[in-house]
Length: 332
Length: 251
Image (cartoon, rainbow over all chains, first blue to last red; front, side, top):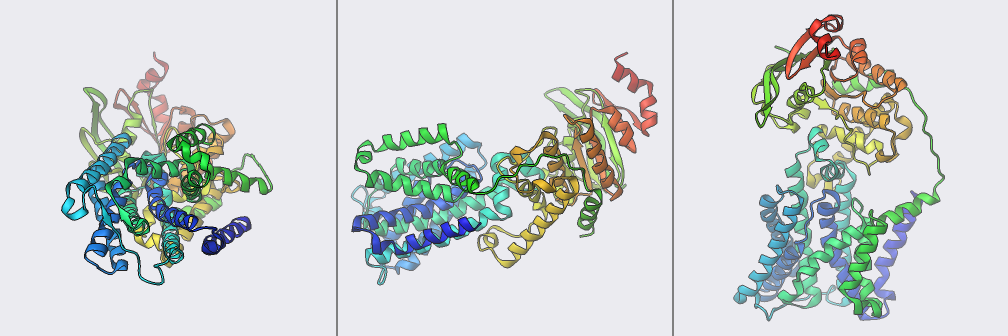
């Protein structure tokens, strides 16, 4: 537990002081981008990593959040903070509209439905030129001071990312998290203990829509200018791959996945040349070597630090204790 | 009429009758054995009780309330829990977390309250963990609370599944071949657990191949063959019944 706490503190200090030790503006831009992506991915993680619903189309929700921000805060000059919330709200509503018909579909077909959704959003952005600027795109405004500098905007993004991470961590660590994993690993058992499968799935899906919408608004403000080309299908696949490489049923793993997959190709020049090939190779390596994801490697590392004890004894049931526990339950 | 009942229930799959007009009544405080050869309809009947199948004809009732069309999830709410022939656990979660999951029925916290980790969510979770931990100690898994479920021995997986079912505070517990794959000593453990539950007032339905175990443990036994009840009564009567002997010995 102490190892975890120390690691969390070190991580928090590193993240909080990044603008002071980042060597150039580009690194800061990259860190902010990771923050915006992570806001989407930490919500999506509950859908993909916990409840096992393979959504590849969240790039569509990201685009909706981004365009909402560019149109409402940019063209119509509404307060950026209000617009940020509005982007989250619209993302949530779109998540609901997408989830209602599609979450009843079995895995493969659900994935197809989310891809179709992303395609439809992309086409609508091009077709509704009057609203979205069509292929030319739209400028997106920055946030007012003190968040108008690169460092300020980084801190705003980091703060929102922290809040969203806390929310999804809470979902994951209490009953809902266990329920979602039950839906993923054994829906029959999930039903048997009384989990309403569809309602649970739609709840996390709407949450992921909200986080995707918020991420979209921050993403638009960070880029300063958005076009439909920004929201290509590969970006949706990228979010999905971050979670799979990070490991399902973990929060730290997908976070590391997001950091590594966003930063490495940008910071290591030879990898940038490889582009998508790098993602492909990394995905292949993880799926073949550590199918539980890189988050699992961290777990194993921590476990090594602990003393090992294995006892496999046949323990007789403690019938008195059992009777007490059962009777207490029945009298409730 | 009290108890959990199947009344004149039939179930067919594409014209093949798995169950034809079978009835069974499970009372609180009894161990009720359900025996029969392979394909006699035991598991089908259990699936009608737990809601995975809807009867083609006939009814499932709990204390007079018709449950025939009620969803599986509804059974947990009204106090019916079950285990599976092949234990259905969550392999990556710990033993404790698996058992806590059974307490879903008593989880009042919605998604938003959980995301905000409101104090009532924390309190509720702590209480359900405590309940699960007591039950696990009770079934003899107290030493393995933090072990991943996939690392458990087969028998311990079965006991874990029973603990998970009990975490839902059921009045009726349906066990699908719980002795399957267990050694003699483990079967003794299982018997002690089931007897304890009966003495606490639970109605336990024991679907089992292992007839010695059933006749030794049960208060009532129902024997099925080809989807019909061929004998129902005290273990000694069922064991002595000529139809039952014929079905089991193939004579």
